[in-house]
Length: 184
Length: 191
Image (tube, rainbow over all chains, first blue to last red; front, side, top):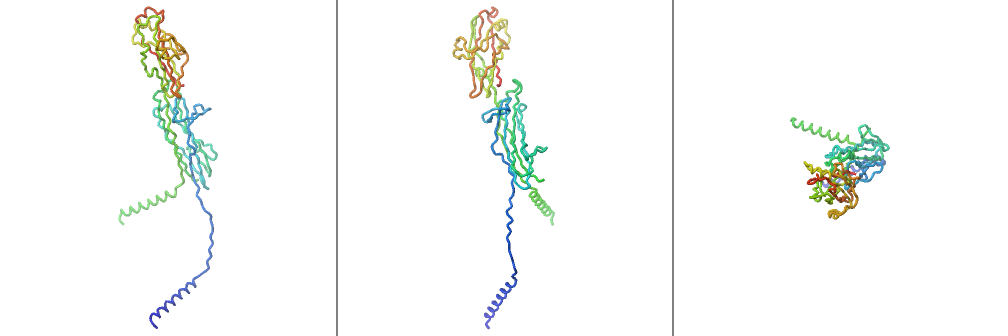
């Protein structure tokens, strides 16, 4: 027998053995897909919605709009800037804490005549005001938190307010609202 | 292992730990900044004759004799951004060292101030018309009966007064040759 023929027979035999071997290792197998559904994260959003507005509340019973672009403060005026922050918290165990900070406004020549005060309304249902001034909530939901910056130009006595308080710009410091998620 | 290599490895491990710890401690945070527009204070300004200290030379009169007078118009203007009311706050002789004749003349002079008369008529020595605001002697307590209102909006208001200074017909002889430096003061008050 020729050498080439021998080699061909050997190769065919080896292939047959391999095929046979493959058949002998087969076992039963069953597959089943389980749909566990999707998992989504919640969210914690803080928005301020509509732009804030100024009002002249010198007469608290009859507030009128105050336009800082065209209206000026004079002794005896009380004006207030109001805006509402909205917390949107979603998640099974979501809870959070809102802090409102404002740097002290430099009053310049108006020092001693003008006062600036910040007030946050914590009366919304589900909101609790903590001793340190932060506002907390313990459950998912939407919460509205109005805040008010009040600027008071003291009336003083007749002739008491000097001309150095004329035409002064009062640039109020920005408010920083920080909403932090907290874990119990 | 060389010491620098050991240190570098330690630092790298600490850094990894730090990054890892930062990642595990993260909770959500949302921030907003609200910057209210700036406010501006207004101003109160009252100008007589267009100035804060006006030299009312138009009123100057010389060689006045009993029964004669001098008169001139005076514009009072609101120069601020707020409504105001103004008031006469004295009509006095501000001469530094008046002699006897000066003092007699100062006592004898009469001042009359009217509003509502045209400046041209006033400056032409026309008879006084309009609303009488003050008439009387030189007096530090001289006042209008009622404060006058000058609004600031829509444009700053002004009004023309007519001021007359007269030597009464019955002025005393000792007033002859006297000289008076009349100062009229006005004060504005925010309304």
